[in-house]
Amino acid sequence: MSFQNLNSSNSSTNTADSKKDEFRRYLERTNVIDAMTKVLVGLYEEPERPANAIDYVRKYIGAPANVDVDSIKKENEELRAKVDKLTKQLEEIKLQKSKGSQKQSCGSPDP
Image (cartoon, one colour):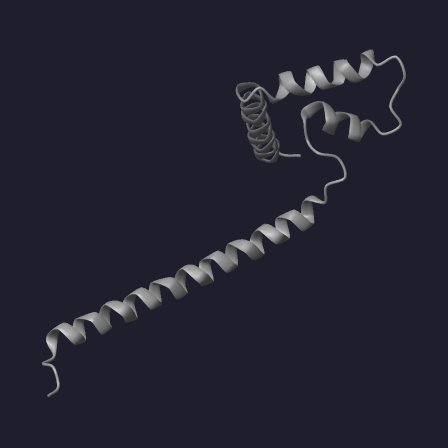
């Protein structure tokens, strides 16, 4: 292996390490590490291990159990699209109404 190849692999390793460090600092800054530590300590201190550790973690963090996140995301996307469509329709109606008002005020009344 040449020195240049060794140097480029060190560069990519440094980039990956840098990204990991940045992510770790983000987790620390947003208190995720503290919250996960508390959850894991709570799980460790349980006298009897729960049958489903994931449900225990969700419950401890406060997330509702048995929620289908994918279906909620899909519903959210559909509702956002519907809101966008209705907002556009409302703007079109307002524009038509204002054009109608302008025509009535600009035109002379019929005899």
